Image (tube, rainbow, N blue to C red; front, side, top):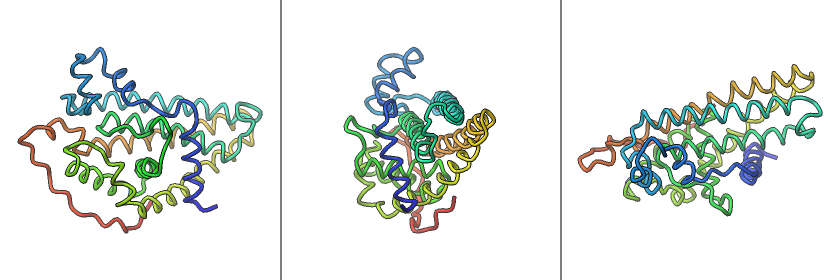
Amino acid sequence: MTNENSFELALASAASLPMVKIDRELYLRKELKGAYTSDIVDIAVRKNPAQAGISLEEIDKIAVKAIKFETTKVTTISAAAGIPGGIAMAATIPADIVQYTGHMLRIVQKLVYLYGWDELIGDDGIDDETTGLLTIFMGVMFGVRTATTTIAKLSASAAVHASKTIAAKSLTKTLYYPVVKKIAAAIGVKMTKDIFAKSISKVIPVIGAVASGGLTYITFKPMANKLKKHLAGLNFCNVDFYKDDYIAPHVEDVDLDEGEGI
């Protein structure tokens, strides 16, 4: 099985797990209620938080909380799975990859909804276009250079073609399919290395649990922060972007055939 296929299989398996899908409307309402009026919350859900006038600073605070929550969850579960005979007696590398990918999907959804993107995973699961977008977002987390440039171009294209809304799913398959495949292969290499290191730590009881949870912590949180930082730099979470007199900065064309260093 190629690295590309291994990642795509892990992504599809993780997306089908219970509790992985984050309902965009429910999540935004939960995080914004109490701090903002119902009218502002309604606009944030119908459009996005920045269009509702919610500042980047406030969105950053919610994002930091989300990353902390998901990091704690994935670290705790990983540590338990690291004990031979514990949860997942199936402490196999594929099981770890699916588990880890599931938590990554959760934080990806939370972050993109906070920073202005539309619903990613529908009630029927993920289709090819959704898979493409999720792959690109996760590529940013793994430090795949081509993924960061692709997200920038997708957001710029969506702004031009969809009146400043991120309806980028329709753009992904037609414009970026070859790039998505390259990103998936790059993630597969990186993910396999990380999970393999975790699997070795499970050989030693208890110590293995601590090592497994610790490794998850030092990989998951920085990757989530990397995506947060990248999304925060795009126009869609900029309140000024939605003002009539706003002049968007020029977006340079990027060669998407560049190498995707990790």
